[in-house]
Length: 524
Image (cartoon, rainbow, N blue to C red; front, side, top):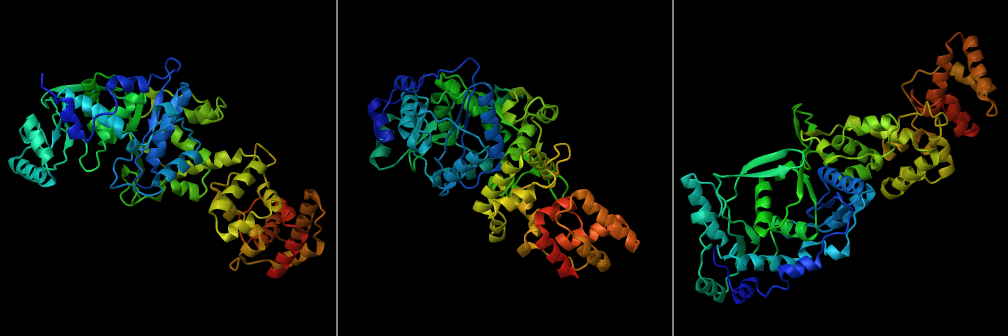
């Protein structure tokens, strides 16, 4: 067995003696007191910019699996990549989870939940690895590693620090001390004993057992520039001591799967269960081919797009959830469940093929969801969105909530025939904008029958019920020798500027006599 470093030398290498022993860490972060079968999941984004739709998809699966099993869903901020960190990114992440109803439970016993605040924990585990000879201090500089890569490429070898190219893996104590005395700051590297000619088998909950070549690379565990861990090492330490039972992540992490399993086995810890989900794809408008949703090309890749455009968050979540649990739509259609939180999600049912994001299908979910809202709930959501995100015109539309309620209440009194033309809160206000005089746009292309409009003005009475009103429309049509629908269309366009509107009588009732008369007069 390889000889490890002494306690004094470990303290020199790490810059200080470790704060904890492994036994103390195990006591500090005890097993969670949860029911049998409860899942402990975590959403662990890096604060490097926007919240990607794929991240929301993964967080939804994390949250739902925990909720279904009476477990725990955590938010962990992986902020060890200080070069790529973006200001306010954590606020964006938290705001997105809150907006979409994904409530996390960060029990302080298992915190802190920012990796940058867990340095003592990582260093204590690294100290254990150094003491057991399973890790070593490496003093290779950037120039050293560039030369190694160039030589490897020239010889046709895989690039990386491994085997004979891992120059410092067997330094003596005196050589390590000489480097430290010279002011050199080491990285801490894994002392890998893997052989890529051998296979390691890793079990994915959905995909089953997958064979990979063993990892033989001496990967960096602790970085030299800031003493923080790499993703791989932080993932090992945090998931063990936060007692994570299930790791849900994108299939792009499959190549790292054997390394992570190797690290857990090296520590003698049980690895969590892994679920590698498919990427969120779309059909490219130019090529017609399926590709990964791109944060550079696709505005819908950014979760903020849906928030600012006023998409009902419930509908977005239902759509994403139906991608992950394809039986949900049928269950809801049959009335077996009302929301995603009533549907039992089973990990093995999560699809492993490319999840196709279709805006038209999302629109369907949005129409269906909005159609279920009572008028007061619809108004509340539209007003809340407009006050935070809309322009001045739309803020004007929501200022008089009584009038807005009357406008949005048209054709919502019959639950079997509720209108389904609303998709987003922004589009809802745009759809009904003609009800406000400042936003009404006259139709200058429609060829009006002005005689029909004059005849209607002459007999119009705002107190008429619908039958009396319609009888007058019929009488005008008979007098002028035109169709009933022609009279109605002339009124519709005169009042709204559009040929397609909600129920005409209801529209006129909400507008009121003065507005109806003035708009017809303006056309004449």
